[in-house]
Each structure stands twice: as C-alpha cells, then as structure tokens.
Image (cartoon, rainbow, N blue to C red; front, side, top):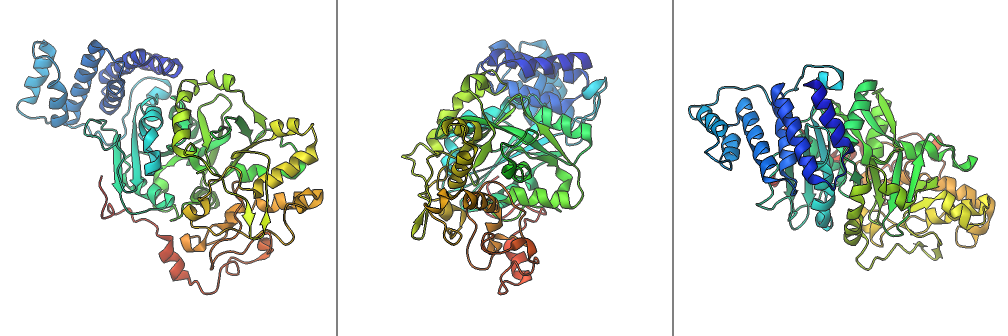
Length: 542
C-alpha cells in the first residue's frame, strides 16, 4: 500500500495540469489506497480534489463519491456521507450496504481532526500533517479567485490541505460565496470593514486547523508540488519556518521574467548587502508551524508584516530553513499593486517557463494582469515635492543582465539605472501611497534628476534606498525599527514614526530615540491590534 501511494503521488507530481481527467483518476485511486490504510482524512481530501475537476468522467466521479462517503462514515460524519450516497444509484449493492450501515447511527469516530498516521516506509510512513493555506484578498482580485487561487490550491499533490480566504470589501467573492461552490476544505471569511494584511493573516490562522500554515497569495502561482516540497524540506531539517532562497518573478506590466538566487553571486560588490535584505523578506513563500502562534502574531499593517514576523522568529532562536527553487515551483507576480518591487540577476525566457512545473498555470497570467494592471494602468510619477526622479526601466522588476546588455555592458551605467529605478515610480500604481497609508518621502538633500547622473552619489542613494521598510508607520503597530527590507522607495511616513534613514543615522539610534516622544508605549500596543485567538471577530461571515 505504501508503495502504491508513493507511485500515485509521483504520477500526480509529473502529470500536466491540463490533463484533468487523468488527474481525477490518480486522485481517486490514491484515495482507495488511503482507505485500505485507514487514512480517512486523506482519502476525503483526495476524493474532494478529484470531484472539483470538471473533466472527471462519470465512472471516476461515482468511485470518488463512494470512497469519500466510506471515509465520512468512518470519521462519524453521517450527514456528509448521506449527501454523497444520495448521488449514487441504489442498484449498486456496495452503495446499499453502506446506506444500511448508516441507518441506525454512526458510532465510529477516528479523530479526523488529529494526525493521520500510516504504516509503510519512507515519507508515507510518518505522521502526515495538515497544511492550512491562508490567503488575504480584496474585491479587485475576485476575477481570478477561480482561475488562479483555487486552481493552484486544488492541484496540490500534498493530500491533507485546507484553504482559508479572508476577504474585505463591499461585496463577497462571487466564486467562493456561490451556492454552487462546494469544497469542504475551503473556508471563506468576508467582512465589509477594512482590515490590514497583517490582521487578515491573524484571522486566517485563528480559523486554521492545520499543523502547518502556508502563505498562499492570491496573485502568485504555486505548482502542484509546491506544498509537498516545502513540507518535506521543513521536516527534513526539523525546522519551525521555511521560505524560498531563490525564486522566479514575472512582471505583468512588461511581460518579463527573471530569477533571483541568494546563493548566486551578486553582479557588483555594492549589491552584496542587498542579498540578505531580499532573502529575509517576500512573504509569498512562507510556510511555518502553527504552534508559533499566537506568540508571533502578525502586526496590524499592510506593509512589511512579513519581514517583521520573520525577523522576530529568527531573533527568538527559532530554526529557519531555506529552499532554493531552481525548477519552478512558485512564481511571484509584480503588477503595480504590490507593496514591494523585485530584483533578479538573470532573465528567464517565457518558453523556458513553459517547461517548468508552473508551465500549465501560465495561461492565467493575462487574467491576473487584467484585474490588477490592465485598467488603463497609471504608474506612480516619481514626484518628490519640486523634484522628479524618472527611470527608463518599466515595471516592478529590475533584471540585471537585461539592463546590463541594454546599457552596452556598462556596470556603472547599470548601477545608475538601478538607483533611479528605485526612487522613481516605476512598477508602483498611482494610488499606492494612499492605499498603504504612507506619505510620499522627501528625497535626500540635493537629490533630483541631475544628481542621479553623479556616479558616486548614485551609489549612495541606492544603498540608502535599501532602508525602505524603515518607513513602516509606528501608528500601524511597529514597536521597534525594521531591519532593512525588500525593495521599496518610501522612507518617510506620517508623524510619530521613524525618521528618514537617509537623513538620520538610524543605525546609531536607540530604539527609544527612533520613535516620536508623543507616542506612548501603551498607545503603540493598542495600535498594534494583535488579534486574539480566543474567538472569531464580530461582524464576520464564515
């Protein structure tokens, strides 16, 4: 049985997503193996995944319904079992026997909420644990909830998963709130009132039943093997937290794709200090043990909450492991609505991406683009008071080798282009500052278009711009200074927060000096808005 399970899992990992009929067969057959091994929860998940595929044949659908009903009986879920059996013909003797078994009552309860342990060798022989995928979202992203978010989730080869979507806005998601949508692995939470991304993540984790939490961002793509690979690496290293150390990035505005690799050499020595700043940010690839919470709850901010929590986890001595993605199990998308922009050392051809595990998912990129950067897209104008910083590099992704080639293999010219791009509005939407509650930062004294041609000053500006996450507002809950983080250009914000790192020697200031004197510690704690895990917030529809 263990060998059969591994064979089906391997086949699911290799099978192209476009072949949904074959995927349904493999999922249903793997569920049959799980039934033999009394892995009821895993069988339910595999059958549910198979039944969500539109290409499933009537025969495979019948088998998946029966197998899921059998598992529901074993875990004591009589109502769900009866619902599945109602769709099956009464002339089938096996169906009739199961119905008769349900007739008096169901007394068998095997603790579906706990760990599911299997016999056999290899990874299939250890306790298989549930992964809770969490996805904060907003109405402008409803357009690709089915084609991107749910499609990536439903295709995962890891067998015990759930998806928790937390949505805020005037209207709920047409896809997830539809009466015809049915997937018991999905929990959809909606409220009209605004919440920050950090608050949404806390709410999602409070609703999670898994042993692991996986960030499953709605605007990024995750290959079928993604969760399986990340959990395996986390378990192998006995770590608390895992993220990617190398990843693929696609810019939806320009159509370019690049690859950042923290283990590869940076193009210039001046860029070396960026390596860790990129590495320990970008929360789209976070996966961690749920028992980190509520100790490490997210701060109530929509900008930098990912960098902040990872910094605190590392500072507390929790073990972090990194996975270098060079095969293509995840694609981070830049589209103008991102909180941060991206840097890549090398260009990746689109044809090459088609051969990766992400290949079958790439057809959904135009839909994401039309929702987030296709509505007569206007970028930020790079105006700072009476000064303007412009860049001839479009989009939110700076690919070094592409710009190096464009600038006749001139490293200093490429560095200057990178600097002006950092301080320009390229790759950010026009209303970014308003959405994030940030005020436009002042440039360092003397900075402007003319100064950007000064090579020495240009290098200094580039390094100073690395302090983008210092500008996270204290009024959103930041209680100590951020370490330098992802590529962002704001370095100032509303009154009562840390000063511009380009105008102040922040490295030599104490944490108390970095905050405005008029903001008291209790006030900061109140404004942090850390979510209590004791109950579901009022006004939520779950």
